[in-house]
Length: 295
Ligand SMILES: Nc1ncnc2c1ncn2[C@@H]1O[C@H](COP(=O)(O)OP(=O)(O)OP(=O)(O)O)[C@@H](O)[C@H]1O
Image 1 (cartoon, protein in one colour):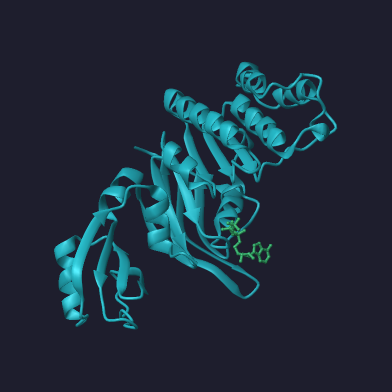
Image 2: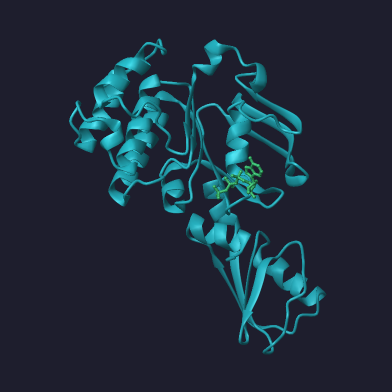
């Protein structure tokens, strides 16, 4: 599988503030990859680097095999980019904006746009400036689908959409991307949408990538462990344990290690534990919160 996006050792600072160091990842052709991370971990920064709007302090980002800062305009046209639900030219109507955009894209597919607009139940003569925030997001998404690009980069695509439209768009995008073998790189804070949509995920922590793997593999490997400890006991740090917490005498932590190895580590750390339980994590949201913490 060839990689459509290749990022190597991206390091970025705003002024003196380090956002992350040595971020490396690939997005293979035909896969849907979701970038997850808490507020301020650098997801939009990464999208801006991928879009060529922001030059990282160091490292390299290639799309379709070319350095993004010098991407050939013909290749750039093959990227559908949504930056936080933004639609320009809000004075236009639904119909006018479709005509306007169509001139720039040789593979323009107006049916894809109008199919989504029909589902949105808005009249073709409606001005974008008079639409709600969620409706504007749908117009922006419709314009991107009509571009028919090889690669879709969507930052916070669910911004302002109600649960029904989110579901509609997620299902539509998933079918479209699979049928047409599109590559998608996206972010969203709505993890249920991500779980329904993405094949692979990158979970970012402050400063680096915590894990990158297929969602199915992540769910099969992250486990939630529980055990009792004496009240007031603090679990010592171990790199294999994610976010241990103790409420009264009940401890909880998450780990990629299997149960026997977690117990071995607890013994090595001389944790006075009892009533050990282990369970598989069943949702991407639980895995995400388990690995990144609740606050
Ligand atoms: N232009 C900028 N100048 C200075 N600092 C910035 C700038 N843009 C973002 N930051 C800071 O960089 C960090 C990462 O921001 P970024 O927008 O990439 O995060 P994010 O993961 O997309 O967050 P969110 O989930 O809240 O959208 C934040 O702490 C933010 O305050």
